[in-house]
View 1 (cartoon, rainbow, N blue to C red):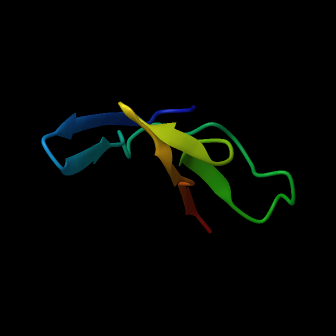
View 2: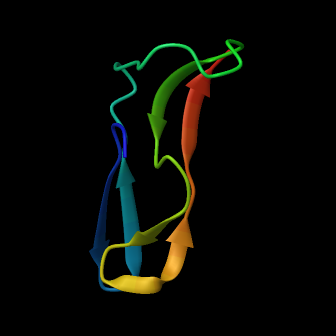
Length: 58
């Protein structure tokens, strides 16, 4: 994962992203990547629940 932190507090999933960071252009070159799970990943402690997250600017 790039610039994504996840934590569970009971049944509440918290996702933290530092929006001041960037990781260059996307593969298409149309946007700039800020954060990504780089595909679908399990949330902490709950392998049956998946998340896919992309944060970007145009």
